[in-house]
Length: 354
Ligand code: HEM
Ligand SMILES: *[C@@H]1O[C@H](CO)[C@@H](O)[C@H](O)[C@H]1NC(C)=O
Ligand SMILES: *[C@@H]1O[C@H](CO)[C@@H](O)[C@H](O)[C@H]1NC(C)=O
Ligand SMILES: *[C@@H]1O[C@H](CO)[C@@H](O)[C@H](O)[C@H]1NC(C)=O
Ligand SMILES: *[C@@H]1O[C@H](CO)[C@@H](O)[C@H](O)[C@H]1NC(C)=O
Ligand SMILES: CC(=O)N[C@H]1CO[C@H](CO)[C@@H](O)[C@@H]1O
Image (cartoon, rainbow, N blue to C red; front, side, top):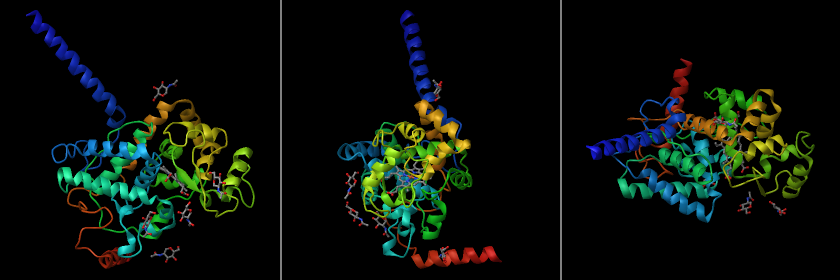
């Protein structure tokens, strides 16, 4: 009897511990709506190991080269902002015509990031068959990039399908704000995708890791120096980039370039943000208080970042019978030509006119 009572209490204890940890992991996520067709447990029966395969492999990749984490995080952001999280950014345009990859922002995506995604896809296919999409793999890889760089862990809703349509260069340019945009421009651009000011400041915190080329920020140095930039910081940047289009790179977060933490916001408060789009978040009254709150409270930043990332990872997703599961992340499965997608776009445009 005593033994039965004890095992019953320990059962209660264990199950309440289990419930508590479950609630913790999903606390922030519980308030975020999930798109129809996506689910937190999408591969539970079809590919239960998908998440552990990706995390384990990325752990090995980052041990050799932690900078690849930034490349993967940015790739997911570009995928989602242009035409939705449909893996379109992964399509190799050179094979069939101009694509998202040919637009100027692509020129600075890391080639290695594409290889890492395709390698992960092969490993997942080997374990489960052709059931996991490239866009899901990319969303999970971005999450693991954040986590393995020291950031928060979080669940990703899964079930995206890969798109058949190439994104055009213009679509890419229209959907990715440039680094010389000010906070008001970024706020209104991201508002069209459903992000509020807190989301915008949190997502910009992605710049706590990674690098930039001179051409993305030298407009703040030449011909006239941006007065909102710290003088010593500016002088150091001029050494890295003696001319506007000099081919060199520098880190986005000078305090901890490879660690996912809240130091990016401390940089902004010290006028050491690299892009106008970063620094102006501290100049603008609408976002200044949010920057400060993240600079003093890292867990607040992490919480808001997770909410915004889960939102971002669901932008215009394809689910169910839409799209496909690609057999190679760089190309669509056969049966759909570039010509067809152009004709389709033309018809779309026409039906809009009629
Ligand atoms: C809000 C508007 C944004 C602008 C204007 C912007 C702009 C840029 C630019 C110009 C670069 C450097 C490219 C180069 O010259 O090499 C960059 C890098 C990067 N961005 Fe953003 N970005 C934005 C939002 C985001 C978001 C939402 C994320 C992810 C959550 C992100 C993650 C990154 C990362 C990780 C890098 C470094 C990539 C690497 O090291 O390979 N960015 N961004
Ligand atoms: C893309 O934008 C440029 C400049 O706005 C324009 O000249 C060009 O016709 C556009 N191309 C397409 C395919 O819409
Ligand atoms: C490139 O930048 C590094 C610092 O990131 C700097 O030490 C180096 O001098 C720069 N390269 C050239 C050729 O100026
Ligand atoms: C910039 O320099 C890197 C090596 O540091 C090189 O791989 C790359 O091709 C160069 N890019 C351009 C546009 O010259
Ligand atoms: C930091 O933010 C968290 C929310 O993530 C909150 O629970 C905590 O009270 C905040 N800490 C301080 C010192 O304000
Ligand atoms: C079409 C094209 O040039 N795509 C390139 C986009 O950038 C990646 C990474 O640098 C290249 O691998 C692609 O070939």
